[in-house]
Amino acid sequence: MNIAVVDDVKTDRDELVTLIKRYASLNQIRISISEFDSAEDFLESFRSYSFGFVFMDIYMKEMNGAEAAKIIREKDPDVIIIFLTTSDEHMPDAFKVHAFDYIGKPAEKNRIFKLLDECTHSESARFDEPVLSFNANRTQLALPYSSIKIVKTANANYLDIVDRKNISYQTRMTFSAVADELSNDNRFLQIIRGVLVNMDYIIDIFDGKCLLEGDESVPVNVKKSKELSDIWLNYKFAKKRSLQKKRRLE
Image (cartoon, rainbow, N blue to C red; front, side, top):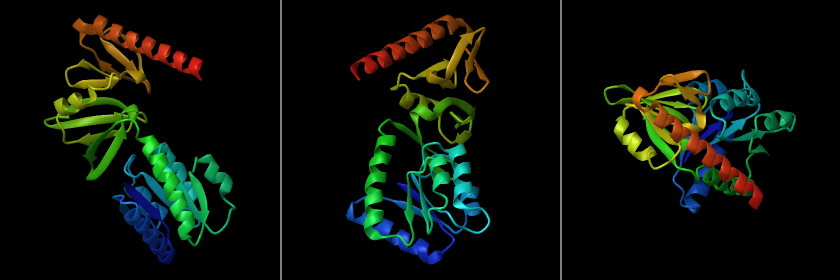
């Protein structure tokens, strides 16, 4: 579990890190904590899906935590953000970026432990679905299958993995290795050699092209175009029937 602590006051940062480490030790949870003394430093190194939790101080020099959280949300809609503050003045901003919680400083043991209990439960729920783990730009990432839009061969032993925000990650992996893993999930369809797409993002397949959300298109194996289109339509209808059944049960 990767955790970021962003606070320009070192004593506050040290206290929080100590509490998080104590919680992890008591609960036998493996964690990695990265510390940052400014929002700018954090954003410079931040990559989508590189952190499970971000503890963000509201009041910092230059860019404040609320402003930084807006940028974080553009890159990673799922990361858990917890604001740290000495005032509730910015509470409305916390709600706007869907912060998980908003807690006062200095950090109190019982409050932090309770919050981490809730967070780890939420983190588990977030990753109930499988994730694809890979390294990109020397950062270990874990991308939920639902967030993967395209996987395609870049060059020898490298892949481009494109997420739902059209952010592309290049990783040193073989296409066959990733295709073997994702083939266990019926969302993914290989439409041509070296290109795998998530059918949840397909808009249409015609004239040798697969149109995807975000004004993107990728070529399709022309000889198999009709077959691929039928697979996608069958998947689409099956998913719709499943949702309708679920609603009726609810």
